[in-house]
Length: 73
Image (cartoon, rainbow, N blue to C red):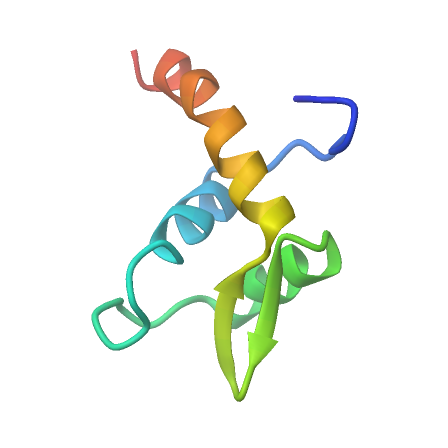
């Protein structure tokens, strides 16, 4: 991926990361276990019980976007 982030995310982790771009009131329920994993990676933080992307999570999501297109093709 990049030098700052060495973890290979699973498809479910990618989907959860992408879902976090949507405002909390509009998104569907997230898998708590996956959110916990992303929190452990430093990609997500919890604020008053609401999962939000960290700056690192945003970077990974943006840098991984072109890679995700390759997988979808």
